[in-house]
Amino acid sequence: AHQDVPAPEAANAWYGGAASVTSPHRDRAFENFYLVLAGRKRFLLLPPTAPAWLPARRCVLARWTKGPDGWALVDESPE
Image (tube, rainbow, N blue to C red; front, side):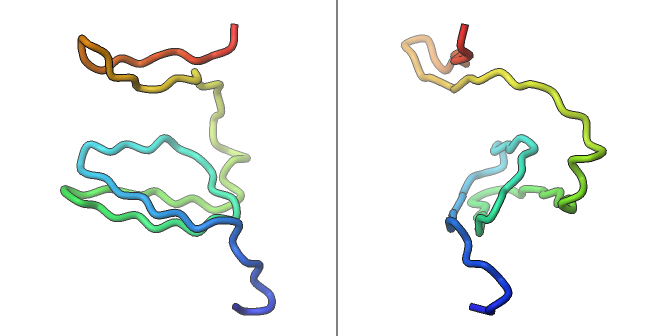
């Protein structure tokens, strides 16, 4: 490794298909590798200064859960 570049905190491998959607987010000191198994994925990479001019809003904490009637989005926000 180059002396001026710190080692990453983590190395992540991601994979998905054409239906995979990723919300806007910020990766800190992570190395990421993305493999598209089918279809294509478009990435929009912004400079580190971008949060200063991007609108921000709170997101609902939720997860997809498979039940007897199919998939449902379950709200996990604290009361």
